[in-house]
Amino acid sequence: MRALRAAAAALVVAALLALPAAAGAATTSKLGPLSMGYGQTIWNYDFTEVPGSWNHVDWAASVLFYNNAEINKVKSAFGGRYWLFGSKKHAYMNNGSGGLYDDDGGRKTDTPSCLGSTRHYREYAPPSSDRMGYNPSFGYYTFTTTHYDHHELCNDWYDDSEGTEADLYNRAVGKGWAAYHNYANFYNYEWRDEGNHHWRNNGYATYIRVP
Image (tube, rainbow, N blue to C red; front, side, top):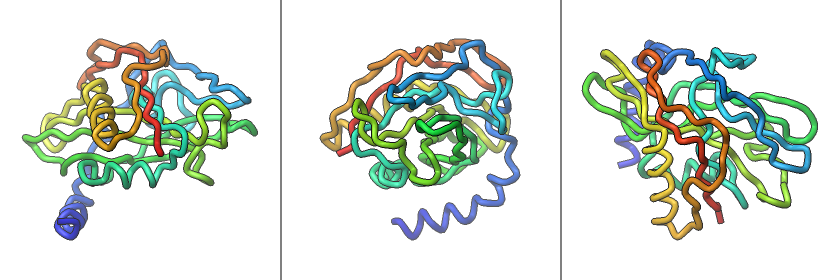
């Protein structure tokens, strides 16, 4: 099965490169830093370009993996369902020693097509360590944006951050991990349509404890 998935991923590389930049740049009035304590901050949206700005956001941050989180560890844990890479976006953070960007394509549940849909998350942390530096409140953590891609190769649209957030929560619970749905306010409520970018985010992030 893994070999078949790897082959399928290789076949869609050219198609992915030909795609428009996901939903295209969207706008928000809610962009801002979230203090995580101990001199660390994360920003509550990811961006379509660097430097990021309020009129070049992609999706709202909606999941925090904490305790012993590391990007590849999380991606491996969810790899049975989220197995295909996506196009890269950018997130901004301060690990306690200055601001920096991370780029991530995240993972998707299926290949792009004209008729199908695929859930998609992107996970961010400092690229030198793939996790935020140790924080007494959160341990080692990463932060994640979520959405749902529809008909990416024909008449594409994007929505349902809440649905993909809930899917990650349910799969974490299924693994026996502690998880807290809509645990913390990330101050990024968006429930509106902007072109083919359909904001569906209630502003509250789910926290998932990685063993």
